[in-house]
Amino acid sequence: MPRRYDLWTMLVATLGFSLLFAAMRALHWPPEAAVVTGLFFLLVGAGQALLFGGESPRAASCAVGAAIGVVSTLVSAGWGYVGDELLTLALINGAGLAFVGYAVGAIIGGLFLVADLMRSTMKPVTPEDPQAAGFPADEPLISNCRRAMDNPTEHIEPLVSLPTEAQAMIVVGALESEGIKSTAVGGYTAGFKAEAPGWVQVMVSEEDLPVAQNTLAKLKQEIAEIDWSQVDVGEPEDGDADSE
Image (cartoon, rainbow, N blue to C red; front, top):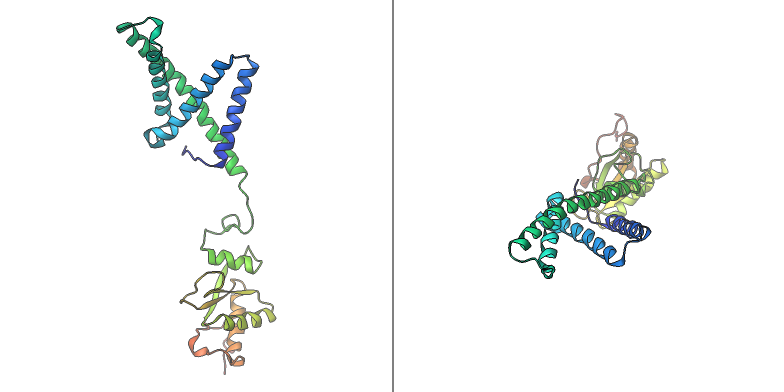
């Protein structure tokens, strides 16, 4: 599995070391042995993260174990072994600790599995999450619209783009008076851009879109503050809704 190094990994690793030292204390291990064992786990974990680009944790575990075996044997040459005897002993210890490193690496891999399980289990799921609500991941503009309309379970569609925010708010107010939930985003509102730089989009739910188009066609006749020649209001559903 891919290794992720984040807060969950740190928490699980801390828990793992706590359990390790608690077990060694329960078994009455001497302090020196506990320190060596903890250091071995730490070096194997670091090797998995740093060696081979983090792509081969098993090989990294074996390599770290073997290196520790060889180096520790060479450092302990004061035992009286010299020449071929020292080389043979170093190879034997290296091979043995390579297997130990593999086993320790498997334990560390289990910690990553636990961290991944906790990460997926503890992930907050709210209606504002588009994927949790059954929507594909979309741009922040749409998520912002759902939040502004307090309507996280509807598809949101653009109704019209207007040159200024003031004009957009006039349309939003008129739609709200008809019982149609809407919001204006774009321009400098919430930091999002509409279809054209500086323009503002009025957004409505997909369900309300046909009614909103009819209402917008009526507003074209009633509201003189907006230069409708610059605005594409779309085609209303009813044929008589846009009659002059």
